[in-house]
Length: 178
Image 1 (tube, helix red, strand yellow):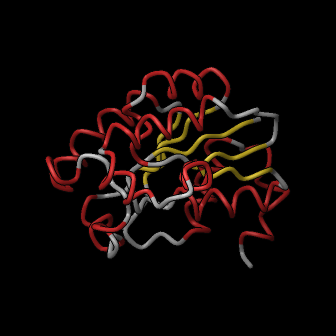
Image 2: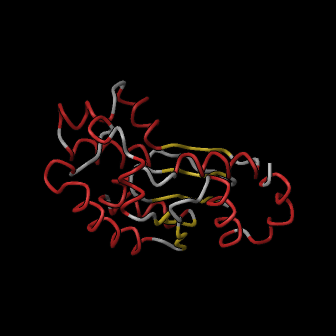
C-alpha cells in the first residue's frame, strides 16, 4: 500500500508521515526534500530566484520521477495540488489523505512562513492560499483527516490508521501510546 499525504504547509504531513512509516515499517518519502536535493537549493530560493511556477514544476517532476514500490508513505509539498499531472500520478498509485488543519492552527505553526518556499504567498496571502487550496485538497483526497488544534502527531497517526488502515490498529496500538 502507498499512502500520499497532502495539506497546507504546517499541516504535519512530514511529522505524521515519518511516524506512520516508522510504525508500519514503510519507506518515507518527503517530496520537499527531493526537490531540495535535486536542485541543490532551498525551496524559498527557487521561489525568489525563479518564481512560483519553477517550484511547482520541480515538485511535479520529482513526483513523476518516483519509482514507487509498495509500502511507502509520501509527504508532499503543499503546492502539489497545483499540478494536475502530479496529482493524477499520485491518485493512480496511492491512497491520498488530506490532513485538514484549521487555519488558526496553520498560522500558529508557521513561524518560518517567509523562508519556507510557499507558492502563491506574495499574491494571495496565507488566508487566500488556505481558501484556494482547501477546495483542491478536498477534490483530490480519498480520505480527509480532521486535525484538531490540540492533536499531537500520535493523534493524527491514530486517526489515519483508524481511517485508512483499520486492520493495523491492533498491531500498533501499543506503539502509539509510547
